[in-house]
Image: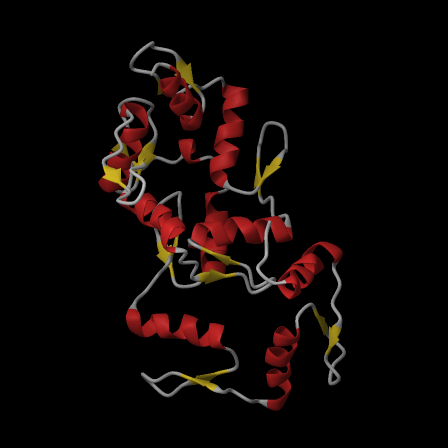
Length: 246
């Protein structure tokens, strides 16, 4: 991982070392960054310098103000990759995703894939999923020509070219192009493995990874190559297989 300034590297290294050199003189709590200490001290002083121009409500930090402003704009940037529900805060998405602990294969939504039997709450989700079987990728990046199965994946990819990284980790201040990338990063920091396999007890950081692992026990291989008929347990394995034919 590269950093533009050495000071950013020093701050980042504290994620690994656990060093917290900034101490609150009021309560003794320690922090890895001086900016986090400043925000914390406002809890003691009551200072709330960040004001919403829409309603006048004030907040201790700019990140709290950004979250609040979503109540006016309706923005919900954190999408659940299991069911498509969106949230205004990453913590709400984390709590929501824990409801998906049981493999999705056990859930029965009304829209069923005729190829593998997986079900979905919305027909739009089923349409995107079916492209994993057909290989269809209708959305193309204007910059590099790479193609994607869904519009949301194309938009997330294009941020690589623009350099846009609007999602910031409140632990280490690292930024990410999408809310899902931020969630993955936060799981690395916390080592959250709340999705457990009922067969062997192994824990995983996402329901998607749990389902992929679960196929080791069931032998399920739902992704079939239309060219050679070989089936795969993972969509990524099918993609690699299809590329080998060209």
